[in-house]
Image 1 (tube, rainbow, N blue to C red):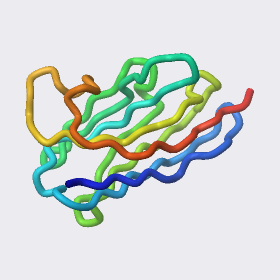
Image 2 (image 1 turned 90 degrees about the vertical axis):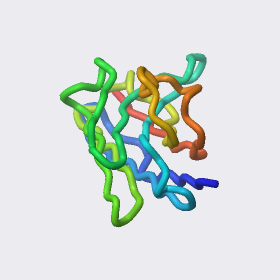
Image 3 (image 1 turned 135 degrees about the horizontal axis):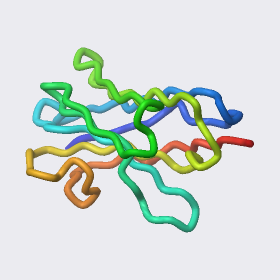
Image 4 (image 1 turned 180 degrees about the vertical axis):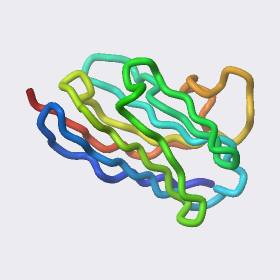
Length: 126
């Protein structure tokens, strides 16, 4: 089992920054990839960013490229999402997820992630 606990969400004005953290415990040694997803009210959950645990290879959805940065600290078993230049369209519940196994094209597919955190709310005011 893997437990994921997100933190760092909150209310911020447009143009501001937040850093989300996701602390992992359990079978992290076998995680291939960690990802961040988000879900806004009335919308489907969408991919935001992902990073491979060992190689540090990253992937971002187009709307957050050059604004968000995903990183991981293996010593702390923690994944981060640094979010800059936030805008109201970034308002959502942000979820951290763990993917145990490699699969071609799996990075952005929420159905290919095995464990999920409880989510943290990010609200960006205009």
